Image (cartoon, rainbow, N blue to C red; front, side, top):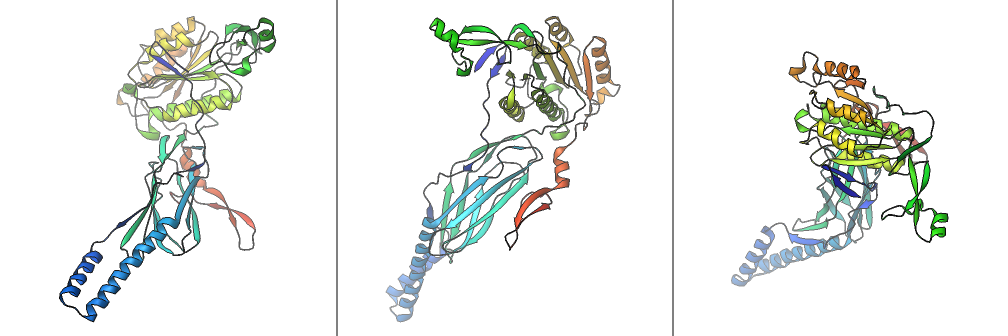
Length: 456
């Protein structure tokens, strides 16, 4: 679903595929000479044999020519017999987790591959796959490659290729695997953060007069079927009675939806990487969305980057995947200010819902729009990133702290987050290492804790 209005794009994001074997499409193997000297020598021997007939030249010509023929036939066998595959060990990864793949190479020819080089063009930061192996005839080899996921985002695994050669190094064999698979590294989800979820607007679950665009536990009537309505929403008794498709009309949950609004205006951001305001906003949004969904509250996300996007409130694991995927791909490169973002959110948010606004802005020009949200029945909770702790020298007099106090004076819940207050999960996991399973020569399976490294 894609709707546009007020500069806001409403996008229904499907869950990202998780795992599987990749790069199974193999283009035609190639055999090409990698050295000119043997062929130049063969031509010189041929000329010498014609100009100076003699057994020594003929013997050298036959030997040299035979070596080239044997090398070509060897390379041709390898081109037909070598094959490889790679498979993700864990398809869902987040920052701090270990991305691991299982590689397998098989040599079905009757000749050994003295060396097989795997070259990879993956762009996952810190992930290096290129290795060299030796494979005997009718044998195979398998190994694991792994690296710590350092940065969230969308990356590519592959394309990759196998390279080998005959024992004389005359012909080079290349087996390309042209396909590539995309993988999303999600932001980590912290279980404890110094920001609570906004409370619901009433105790218990009662029928609300507002209509919801997502399924809730409260059904307050029926309406005509519309394109893209899920089939499970169809109310079959009414459909049979009226001889037309009708779907259930869901009431808004009395506890209220939760909107997570991220101010991604580029001019307000400070710092780079994990120590920057952008990553702190992502960590907060990931943790708050997980808490909301765990409490069975409809949770949505609004991000205002270069292309503003909105995920309508929803429940369940699928909604969690949508939000995490959007957080993994976002970038703080927006031009619109927080005032515009609040105005747009007011056009789509339902009455009785709650908004958690995360911003690094130190200005106050967006406060009127915040008050307008309250007048529309949308309660707001503001999370301010302390600009002074992120290196803004102009905030040395406590500007963010004063803004927090001003918001509290207006009746809004407000929290101040300093740089590094949310922690770094990648460092913690690197200190602990990982559990692995190993098989002893007697067939017993044991667990061992291995230290974390870039590759293994």
